[in-house]
Length: 133
Image (cartoon, rainbow, N blue to C red; front, side, top):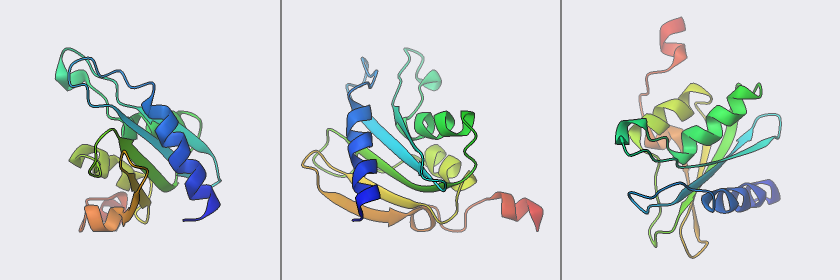
């Protein structure tokens, strides 16, 4: 893993500390690396009405987009679990909106990493290219 991706993983681990998860106790941290090299962190934010909950991945992406980011190069995702935590379906679709070739770095509670891609996790995705063809 390159130095920039290591920095991204560390940002995701740091973001997890701010998780607001009083109902599930399932802390998740994420960080995105924009195409222009910026890093934005996010954590999951629960609500007693589960539908109002926001995942860490979307929090990080929305923070980046609110600062002008329109393209994502990579995202790191971590939780307290021994196994790797993958993005949910909604997050996969949101990731795809801002990059169809995004590297996904999964980090377990031991600090081990697994690389994936949005193409692997969301094959034949519905994308803006679909609408623009």
